[in-house]
Length: 352
Image (cartoon, rainbow, N blue to C red; front, side):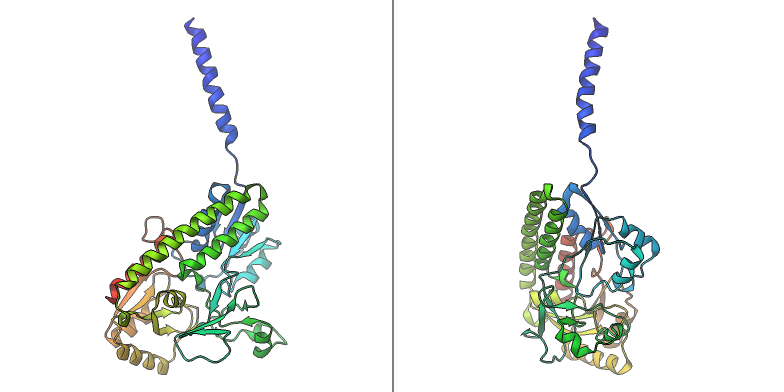
């Protein structure tokens, strides 16, 4: 009798376990995102249905990245490649050629209003629209295409296109002056989420409703974080909302939250740009004239030049901002929402 009872119990146990084992399944999509910030948004939208990997690791500087054959092989194994766009991934063409595959590429920033690099300086009349010191070049993917940035000359990439000159490029709707750091405004990441959801829905129609629902929920969280930052910045007097940054990565943040970017140490959207002695002297003069208390640099790039300028100008240097990548899981910015709040809190605290 006891033996019979044990057999019944074992049979019941297997009846519970077997369905659970059968329920486990591999992800519907394998996705590669270029950066950890983009990968974070892609994971939120995909949930358990999507496996997302990041091409670059945590705390990496995308501008200094050089793809390897192993990276190309990783990309070749993905169902989708998600990129920021707006000229951010200058290495992309070479990498896709090395990958030797026709992997679908999703430009997450399509639909975002793109601002011009150098928005803190003097502007010409070429911008489609101007809001104070911010030049709106147009909407990415809707008549505006951005050329890849170059460390040697971020403003002129026409040499890479034989037979084309700068004027012809502009007439064709291309611009090398695009600022690609769109994620510094959290509302732009809503566009990311929607674009990613639609790409997932097209690749995996059976789960389209889930992807769109995840994107909608993420959008609500992004709007809440935006409101939190708006309230934080409101505590800072307007005359204190002046930024000097290591390179041009805070344009969208400044435009959205009402900051003025008085100067940047290295012009252009790349951390690899250089500065000549005359520009350096002018920069120090601006910092002194504006009486800014700090220069803001980021963890992922060298802060040697920023530290030298800060010392010469008699101000402090803040090197803890996140620009191109998230932190490790145990850091201050393991998710995008953590990143944007941490940056805002750090900036407001330093400028108070």
